[in-house]
Length: 288
Image (tube, rainbow, N blue to C red; front, side):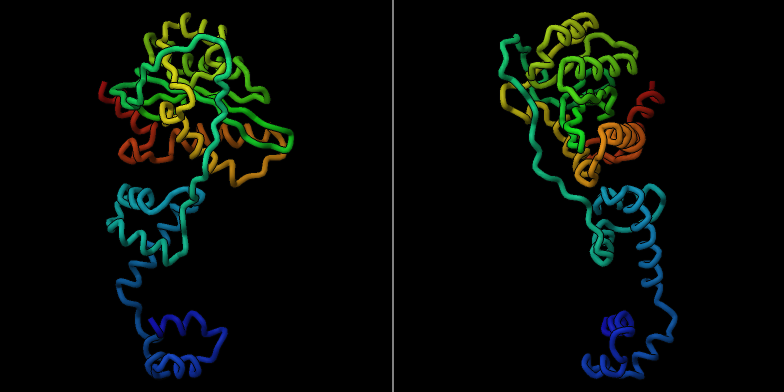
């Protein structure tokens, strides 16, 4: 370890001076430099390279466990603890999540639906349970609002819409995309909060028209819609908080790319046993 430190700092201080301070012989240092690297060192160099590649590909979004999973998938056998040690040595850390503020406006006189979901976020097949929610994205032009619909079976974002207005058209557009992409299935439980957009006549008419079952969270209880809230936290941590958007259009393009090319297809989810939503969907199709 002392010799490695001397080698790392040899451009800043004299080698003999560092050897004297660290109480090692300069001849021992030069002998160490001339040796062929140990196999463990070579293995660490190879592992570090692969860890950096995965970390950079996912733009710093992955921590030790997900990087470890990626290594195992491509056939690189190592322990989770070793990956964590190498990350520390490389000074690489996953992005951390911030506190999240909800946007629900439940101060209205529209009727609300019962909480059919009741925090049961499991599903045995696609199109059994969907959840929806709204969040906001800051831009220099003002807020951009994003509404999504997520299938609880695979955690795929199957519907989304963005607008400078937070209104009933926003949530209806997201729901219509989800219905169209899934072939307009019947009897799906559609769970949201009890915001005015979801309680509006236009949205509720869509629920009835396409024979969905409406479910709503209890008032002021974000945990009743935890999966949608979790998606927004991930989106903001891994994308929005790292970017300053000049225009709404720029934000739209970035969010579209994140959802469709990264989150749905590439990002591994702990709730899916570290599979991607696409992998889960394909497994179901292949088993059918």
